View 1 (cartoon, rainbow, N blue to C red):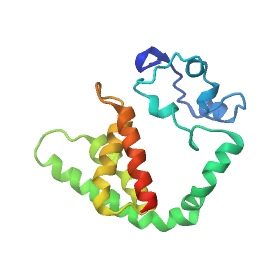
View 2: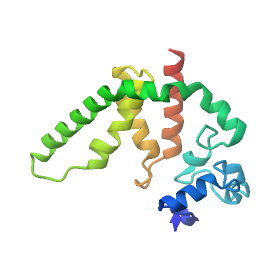
View 3: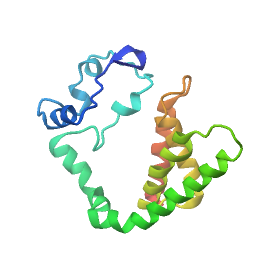
Length: 172
């Protein structure tokens, strides 16, 4: 399989294969172990650059991963997640109601845009206390930064703007 720009990729889809990959010590999430990246064969304007050009808990291993994960791990503690269950249920029900209203027009409804992307965005905004007035901007930037199916979009610029907005929220 190939990613945009004919970058080779694996598509690991079976439970058995996923478990094998995730438990294999020779497999790394760190792009610094990826030869196409370290050899400079991935251009800085590559459509998926935001997946590899940042250092975060999703792109690191070992001690660095633990260091970056530690500040947020309490937010994902099972008790905290259980406490959010009623809010998540409300979010899902609201979005399903909105889907039903959108479908009343008889046309197609974009399930990804109106539901699948909205649930995690709303939950994460709640989890991190993003004020309601800031949410549409954050949602729009996330949509642009991470939706790599739209050609001609400057994903890197949107990702940089998203980082700036999140930094502003963190210091507010």
